[in-house]
Length: 438
Ligand code: MN
Image 1: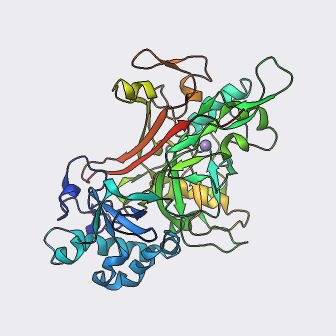
Image 2 (image 1 turned 90 degrees about the horizontal axis):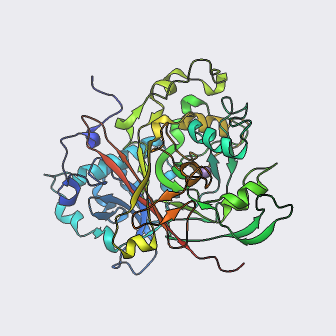
């Protein structure tokens, strides 16, 4: 049955004259076209918006005159942030993406004019896609909530609000980056059996594998966004690592939630895969187990339940300094799909705005750690090593409970579905740098 939400940009037979876009296994075929902020060596000036195609980046504003009705929207990509584009409407996003797909499609006459505005991804510098005005980190995976809860509160792993409230906290915006070095934080920690805390470098530094959501448009303060309208505010998705110092977190988190245990650094992937590109990979929200309460009315919508999840397979890998030195390949720590999340992206938007809180273009959500049902689908070391009780053996004879200096964590994401060209997210990588003091 033809899907009315799809257009020529999703066509499985569409190929690009950019040959790298047609290679099997590329994250960036012509069916993807994610947006990012880049600076090529050829550009002396400010960073600008581009779209990834195969192993290249197209400088979008430079080809604006070839994009027909999308020309004025394409000019917004001359900015060093995607916020002007994100503040447009979904129809403008769709029009720009379709016109870019058209000029990059094989057999089109514009190749000669477009080609000179392509730059190799390999030599480009990438920047944060947008500077969010707000960052909310949610807790949408019930498997993660249960696993983590069991460690922090063995007697009550899942708090009674979980199945009613999409739990989140307001995170730190200024420390979000696409950079690759993550400084080990110092902070207050209290060792088991001790009465008083000490100040020093975190010894339980962890990653959290998450899906990031960049919001678009804006909503009026005081007016909630309904679940039915929520996707009008979803510009696109990235990979996100919510680095967490578990020892700082454990000592500080009650009663007001995470603070310094998470605010020191958040890493995102530089490419934003649009909601449009993900249309073929939308699917039903995972059924609530029998006996779970139904969501309250403002979080309940049949269409959202039927089509509100996105099937993105996230993989997290680890390479230690020694593994790199000995040329061992990174090991897979976990693999889980975002389709398993208990709360849908639409429900996160509806809940976040339900009290009248407004959203602005460029606002960022983290889904919360994405963990699945089995031991190979966990999205944090807290879960994998059960808070350090079950050390993980690495190739070359090393062991890990939490991250050591020099460890590099890399998250990738890919969407695969029969009848469609697979698309990917690039990667979100960070390497732990030693603490400065303490
Ligand atoms: Mn998190």
